[in-house]
Each structure stands twice: as C-alpha cells, then as structure tokens.
Image (cartoon, rainbow, N blue to C red):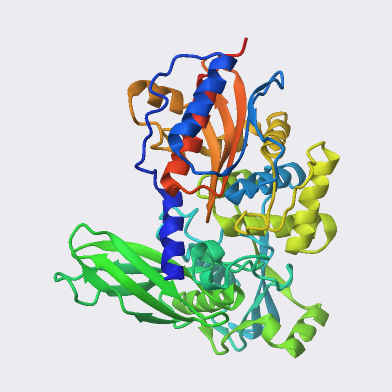
Length: 505
C-alpha cells in the first residue's frame, strides 16, 4: 500500500489538478496593496489547514518586495531544490557543457577479432536514452551508435566482455532520506556515472478484450537483465492504467500489480538495480544485433577487483568513440519541466567531481552551498542533502530561491534557463493551470515556474512577466498542508497568477 500511495501521489506531479478555487477571476493589473489582499484571499480560499508558508514576490529590476510571508523561514523545497542545483551547474559548468562518454577497446585486434574487452567509461551523462532521438521510442539508439563505432574499426568478433566503468562517481547511489520502499520508482532511480534510459526499463501494456483477464506486456528494451513478474489484469474500459511495481533492494526481480484498461496500449516504466551492469548488458545486446559476436558477458567493473586493477594499469586501451551529450542548457529542460530527479543528481555529482574532485552527494552539495555563500545567496537554516529535492531533509527559504533566480537573470544564459521551466498554457505542470477563461490564459502565458512535490510539501518558484513587461520573481513554499495536494498546487499556481497581475509603481 505504501508503494501504491507513493506512486499515486507522484503521478499528480504531471497532471493539472482539477480543483479550481474561486480566485483570480479577473486579470486587470493590481497595485501592491491589492496584491497583498489578492494573495491572502487565495490562501484563505485554498483552505490549506495550518501549514508553514514561505512566500516572496519581488520586482526583479528594483529588488522591491511586493509581498512576503515568512520569506526567511527554512522549509522543505521538494523539487524547487533543483533551482539551487541547476543555477549552480549553469554558472560553474556553463550552458555549453557536454558530457563525454569514451568507448574503449582493450587487447589486440587480429584480423576482424578483438582479443580483449570493450569498455564504456561513464562520466555522468544523463542523456543516454531515447529522449533526444528523432524517434523518442527508440531507447537504444545511442548504444547502437556505440556498436557502429566498434564495427567501423573492422571488428566482427570480441573474445572478451563488455565492461561498464562507473568509477567517475562514488558508489553511493541513493540520497540520504530517500525511502527504501521506493526503489522501483523512476523518481528514486540509482545515481550512477554510467546510466541508460533514466536507469529504468519500459513496459508496454496491452489490455485484453475482457475485464479480469491478464494484461499482455512487453519489455523495452527486450532483455533478460531483469526478471519481470506480472499480476496486472485487464480493467474496465476508460479506466486508464493503475499499476504498481515492487522490487527488493539490490535485486532485479520486479513484480507488477494493478490494472490496464481493456483494448488500450500504454507505456510504463520502473527503476532497475545496478545501472552500470544494465548499460553494459544492453550495449552488448546492441553489438550482437549489429553483427558483432561477443563471446564474453557483460560486467560492472566493480564486480571484478582484479580486472579493475588490470584495466587501471593498462596503458594500451584505444578510444574508438567519445560520445557527447546535448548541451547542459538542453538537458535543463528535463530538470525544470519534467522534474527528472536522476538528471539533477547526476549534475550535482558532476559539480562535485569537477570542482572538488569527488563525484558524491556531499561534494556536490558542498559546491552548491559554497557557490551560494560566495554570491550572497547564503541564508540561515539552509540545508542541502541531494540535488533533486527528493529528500525531506533539505531546507531552503523563499528568499534564497529568489536570490538564485536573481543571479541567473543577470547571466547571458538567463532566457534559455527561464524557458526551460514549466509555463502556463504551454508545457509542464502549469500548462493547464490557467484555463478558466481567455483573460486567465493570456496572463498565464507569462508565468514561468519550477514546481515541486513530495509528501506534505508543495512548492512553486519562478518568474512572471507583468503587463508592463517587467520581470517579477515569486517563490511559494507550502509545508504540512492538510488539504488535497491538488488544492495546494492550485493555490501556489494562483499566487503566481496574482504576481503576474501586479503593477509596479
């Protein structure tokens, strides 16, 4: 039941809530005094219970505070934590930064045979998936390109193994405070320097013609790496997909339960154990499909300490390809619109590796905290445990988040970063938040934000462009509400809406 509840709640992150309070009915510009009245009316009508609130609305140009309520109270940020990680990554790595994944061969090539191994050396690239393919369903296209590079060397046979090397980062795959019973959930995927398909496997479901019959399924990519046990049944028509997954820690036996609507086909996904071994396994499969015979198996280099030492001492390895990711600016869309936790955690560990020489959660968060201190963004009570905000141990303030955006706005990459956020009427969690009437839609199109949700926490931070064309920052942190989560999310969205209506004297 815990897994089911967690999955049900996290799905709310991707859909607009249906609750629409009787607020924001008019889109006329309002003064600062009217803004205070409007925001407090939104909060009152939201009937949030007795939560802890941290709210700040501030004119970006003058720095004038237009509205505030406990802006310096340290609260859980949920995915608004991604602003701290993302802005730091943009500043220190740069918008044009690209991850590079070397594909190496080790041994001697005689004729068309490699008497040795193929090695993939991870560097934290989060993009090795179908996300950036022309055909988004083609999950293995990157690994197929790697296979082509090996084949282009004239290699038709490999006597050794396909080895995954994730030593660029440490072996701490989960953030402190992440729930163990969520290991199979996409948002809690293991953080490895060598990652593939968001460290998940996709499942294609097809409901039967009759309710109660077993739903058909297919793994994408097809692999024996996991053992998949389905107890999913066909549900009634138009009931959608209601599935849960369970997997014991450090195993790949996945049990699926629930229902799928009759006569429908839908895609699902669940996190796997040991992404490094998983990536090496699917890469080996791709090599075989491309006509390369591989006699050895797939291996996580950490599982063979002796081989690991041999490879570290071996200076004869040859690079056959250095695979480059899209730019950091491009990757930021997955962070700020899709709220992809794995992307953010990989960026965090990359900061730790690049700046402090250690790819770990603690090193990465240390870089972010140092960056905030050095740029006047430190606040009392701030705590950073992970990059994504999944941990309930993180703390920040509305003031700190606005300061981060204020820093970003003064950088040449600001517009690209702002546009990577969810936007009213266009994309992400804010897409359908302002659909009540044409005036709301018009105003909503000027609202950009990063939303957040974990149990008991809703957050929304971003920037609006008012009718005068001025940028106005806002941050809304809601902790400990007792209303439905959809109501809390709508309340945050409507506070941003009121900020967009404000007029600067």
